[in-house]
Image 1 (cartoon, rainbow, N blue to C red):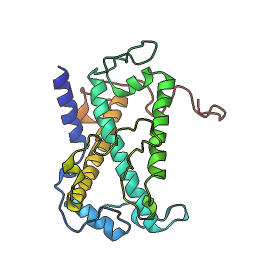
Image 2 (cartoon, rainbow, N blue to C red):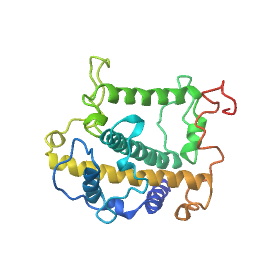
Image 3 (cartoon, rainbow, N blue to C red):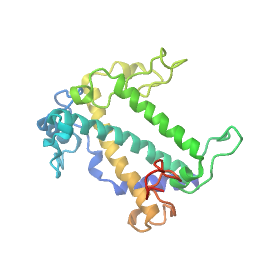
Image 4 (cartoon, rainbow, N blue to C red):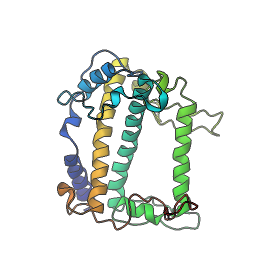
Length: 257
């Protein structure tokens, strides 16, 4: 039953996204470090989706945020897309895991409290202690700070888009698994620039599809029937998906509790 539910969730969620996201990546000139101009974005868009190609209805490719240059703004937007895509891929898989009642076999807390058995991911988030939520948020904050401070040239100044620096045992006692190639594989370590470019395009496409998929899950759970393909597959969620904490983290400001 669990396997069937997982297959249904994955299949239906895929219908929410665009089939074009699976378009095969074309190889061409290497753009693995950064795409800083609108022309670079147009070239990347053609590789990511040969059907739609470049699509920028808000004209963000010509914007300049916070008084920076257009090139810096494009670097920020590209980094943001890759980062949000990675988070969405984790969220998509996590939603399927929680919806099928799959948890770790050990206790969730030091007091022996077990992991919650729920029918969807938002319910699992509501069921864990506030301290656990803060641990997750602080860990994500650490990852963000590590990326920003240890990546060399910043992505808004020509640095590599999507790059995450390896963990340094000097700062992390005992070392840690790196997010990229955590169990070192020689075939990954010796990839050519063309192979890296193809994988980067595939990651962008998968991230875009995952963003559509997770929003499809959340929308159907909050408003039944809002995603017809998921009707009857995603259980209803009675909480507020836009309120991740039981109490506002800004209690001094009125209207936020």
